[in-house]
Length: 218
Image (tube, rainbow, N blue to C red; front, side, top):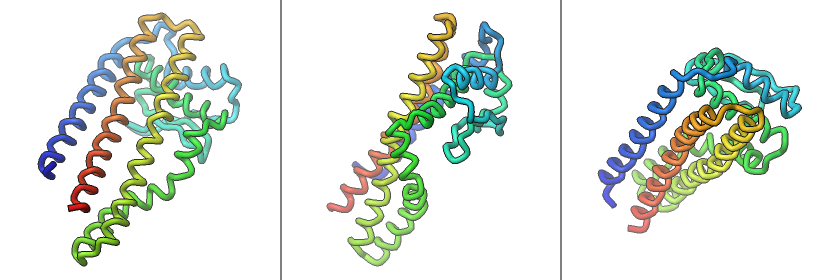
């Protein structure tokens, strides 16, 4: 596979995933939730439902929807924190799903958290090591760069079950509290779209890794 083909494939995958997720988020952001709760209220209610009392829910900036195990806190973007839509509810419950994972010592999350420092280093350095290896015609340095990039790919693969499980926990909770079936269906569409972005990122990284390995063998 040529590098141009790789670039075209990754662009198609990335743009397709982004279009799909943006469409679903926008669609269900316009649909109000029947209980009238904001995303922040939903997050706190879900935490209380599962008996988790030590997790704070913060209002973040645009696009900042995440759970931080270092501070044991959930951060929601303004749209999710203040919103009263299906998208806001799905987003909030998904992030609390991560808090539930942390509270229950969910193994894939523990693995992902443990390798974060290594992955952060590898993701920042592998390209420079590769360029130096090519410049010096050093197969050893090139192989080190590929191994470093493989660590990044491994992180993305470990991320998949963590994200899928958090979404599953969100869907289970929404069913248990009696959210109407139509709203649960919409929330499921939002969560599947968001999960697809992680799948797309992992797929493009795997393709990049395979290309690097193919070039190294040649």
